[in-house]
Length: 73
Image 1 (cartoon, rainbow, N blue to C red):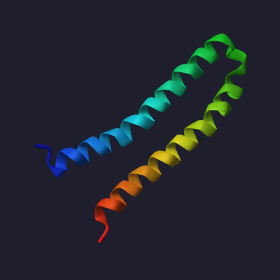
Image 2: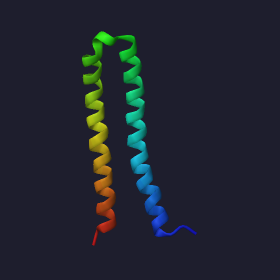
Image 3: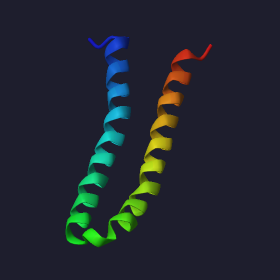
Image 4: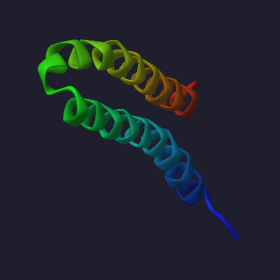
């Protein structure tokens, strides 16, 4: 039924969807906090920065691992 291409697309889509959803969730909550406390904008942005860096590093590592597994010889 499902070929290798379908499996590839599903796995790659999941690897991309999870970080995108996490960034959207962080952004939604950051905007809500900025709306309540506009004078604390720099502090709110710095609080989100580390979380974004972690999401970026984890997602990049997952993509690299996925391709490394596919190309392994």
